[in-house]
Image (cartoon, rainbow, N blue to C red; front, side):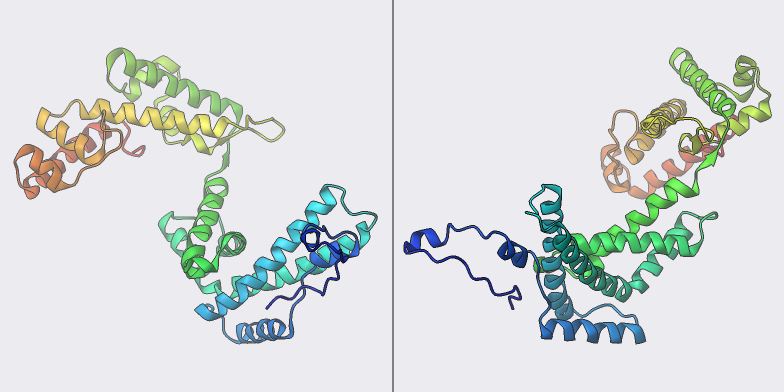
Length: 341
């Protein structure tokens, strides 16, 4: 049901010009200020009362009734913000701000209702992420708060006319919001500039050694080149590039995390390929096809697919893969990289 205030437009004798008349002044403000009908207000109050007693997801028909109301108020708020930003208030700045405040209150009210109805989903995803990523330094409440932020974002983006349930749609936004917070906060450890320089120097030597000799240097070789003790080298190799941030007071490069991620990814591929190259030809080809290494561009293959290329059963391929992985683990462990991979 359309709930805009009644608008009286100027009348013209020519009916063709009536559709071309653009509302101005008070008429424009009325268009930008939607109002709740009695039926809509009753629906929201009923859901709020029900939600206070028991937080359960909304029914499909409740979503279909509630989200069009939210969308109408959200778009009205965007129009009012645009009027203020573009200076089209025509002297009614205070009135527009008051209208925007009322619209945002209703928008927040509906969004909060939807989020609280899906609180169980947020809690479930937060606990799943905590278990899956072994989160130790962030509290459960912090993860839930991040999930609430993701859920509010999902409310803004959700379109009920496409036939999806909000819970299924919001799951992705909630998961992304929580995992991004874990990535940024959980694994952030502040190291001194000295540690960062030692890290970069160590891994630069590994890269150079790989290019020249096509093999990973041992801990002793790295220690001899960098003049660091073997224990310090091992500790440096246990670090991750995304854990390194500058000390307080220094200005970090905004692209440093992306550069470190690219560096780590390339380095890991080179290391893995060098170890895989030491396997016998059949084991090497099985591992490359199964894990998308060395020219496979990340395209992995199933046991049956690899078996067809070798004219072997998938069980035989599984045994070859298992033996090859055991050799890789033993070789990498002897080089001091068992904790790195």
